[in-house]
Image (cartoon, rainbow, N blue to C red; front, side):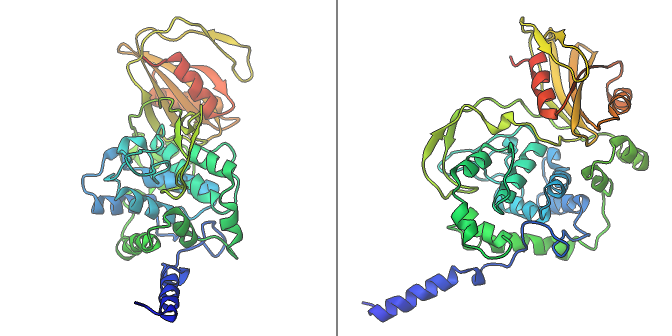
Length: 385
């Protein structure tokens, strides 16, 4: 039997092992002049790194690092560390846990164990944005209209307030790891190990896809194509419109630390990304709906549009702008609606460029203040079965 003093010593030793001193030292979440993503960390090199660890990686994840850079720079955070966290969370996108690959959930948001799969996002871009917004939330930054329902709920519950108050100075990925996975003492070490492996083996290698940096930073796809003729085709992935899921576990900020249950009539999947992927096929093989839809177009009078007869698809494409237009094109028995992100003042030029390259004979049928509004309308024009 241990003496009281021995118990105190053992408790102190245990506390010391769980202290930050024994966790890997990771950088602050927010970028500053002295806390930047290393210049050699590019989407192209990170893509090669993923394939070296997972040779049979699904092609729809080929550009995932580009989305981490795009949304990470937009949010002002160390997106490279979040990328390494994604590698840890998904087992290098093998998805060997409860979450499935087609959920586009890269951080286990809402996956609370026991078979609970967590949230589902419309696209790789949406899933990456949801992950990065959730990470940024830990710093005390309020996320307005977040992609993930988990992020919205955690903000409403205000359960991170005591955590943030307990930390002096900037909140780091080490702090995040202790809260994100409180029962995994090696979580920060795992993230650092992935980071070290990349920096050691890939940072000095040639960038196999340098054009992804330009795409991440919103350069027009046509401009990039002129410089990279061999890689002119847009990235394409097939996803589905999410189904409404009213169940919600109030467990886990990111990977499982709270317990309870609440209900919601809205899912994060209904909140479209502020910056959409380059090109995504969103919905396939739809049927006619009899109701008439009234679409209010920016800068014009309301126009009546009806859901299409026969098969249709909804796509999203982006030149990196904040506005959106819908382009309708028909061919080979299929009607395609493309939600195209465009820059204010360049709507017509970018629409014409897209139509000439990818939607021959297409026409612009709607102009919207945001991609989310345009995408919702596109799904009405091409309704679910």
